[in-house]
Picture 1 (cartoon, helix red, strand yellow):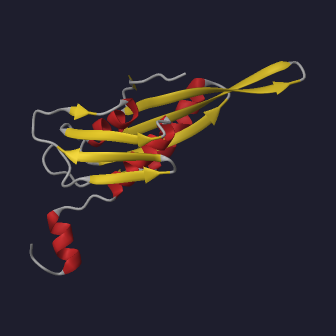
Picture 2 (cartoon, helix red, strand yellow):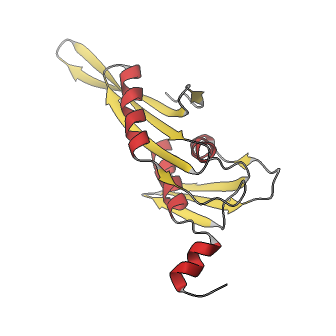
Length: 160
């Protein structure tokens, strides 16, 4: 049961809500799991996964975890500095920088992550598993690998 693009006031985006059932003597006992992405739209974003008996509680838990796990991403204007591939388990996400005016060409899960970071021009392609949790983690892996020209010059001790 995926909710897609649900936005709340605090900049959080619910990527997915899952209903889990535990079979007990009297029938089924349901619980919910929520995957949430938060970001400031200016180069910082994080994700969280929360489980609870009711949906709002699961979303609150996931939002708290997402706010704690925020990381910064280097941006060049409205896109990323270079091409990168992120991997998590059997999911791979290819991120390609694009010219201004291109927009975000991506699937639902990857799009929510990129929009929460503040990227508005990018091309993406997902390979392998399209499980939303794996795609979100693969996207964050790709964003973690990004470096600007200045950062690479500083790391290598040369000027490019």
